Image (tube, rainbow, N blue to C red):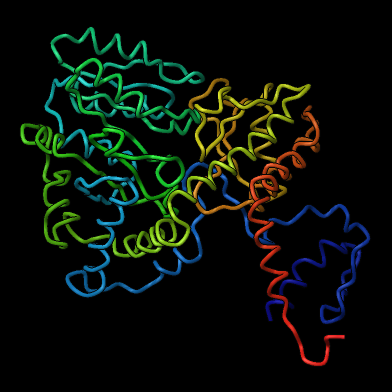
Length: 454
């Protein structure tokens, strides 16, 4: 029935001169088939924006279940396992609280638990999200001091040292930093920030936003001396938005005892220590919890966190290599010049003359690929963001890069050649040892069939 309906709807447009088409006859190829626009309805679209990221089928299936009794059964055991595995993910032995929120909610959760009105905090700005974070705390009544380090070079440890040394009264209650700034794709050096704070003998808490880095870039809360870690579900954790994660140290917990911003909803006490039914200040997000259980199993127990970090590093370098080729003889360039300062889950790039917006539109219309907008960058039409976070592999990345090159060709965007080949070389080189091992195993385990030896 549906096939016949589709033919009745489509054929008159392909054969406008024919009004008596036999809809049950074999459909003939129209003379102008080459002019029919490429369909995006066949095959999977690729959402290559820095959150929400691609959700694995396994995670979708884990969430696809009916409502359950939230007071007993599997969900209670799942919740206990999640606390333990979030600690593994973040590299901490400290406290874990979860919220039904996005990443912005975890900003407010931390502020509500830690501060009183008028408290001074220092926000290290590397892009748009740090500005939004500072604005949120300012609206809560905090005395927010921002140190803007620009969008390209990263945080100057010398300048940070001067700011802390000048605070002789130790009035700064916390230093707040985004580990990965999603807008500029700058990655902060968290161990160096802690070293500067220790050298200055400053008592401030170190609060780190890992919303765009957890599960992509190396992060170690306790070894790096982080007091509060904030994250969310929709990026490296490969889930839909809606689950916020806050890990906090004993030092942070002590600070929370005098906070006058605290409200019942944001209070992390029961969320960290209470019985299961108290941990979400109401009904828990059961489907998201089952999804998180599946994603953490994939990250921690199957692939392994070091391998996850390595994969993101390898794929990031694949993307960077393509841009290096495109940038030759053109004005296409990676925004962050120094590789050590680049995020491993997102790359911000510039296409001068407003060509970034044009390329994004072409990709979405003709290839089913969606790239991120140039958030907080000026001029916005010159910038786009290529996400390579979470559930992705080499063929997804190489296909994305080939699609971008096709778009540049179609739009007449000047660019250097050989990018896809060079990017393929990065993948090939990184797997040479593994390929040799696999080849040896294949030769040693050739199937033998009786009667076919000759």
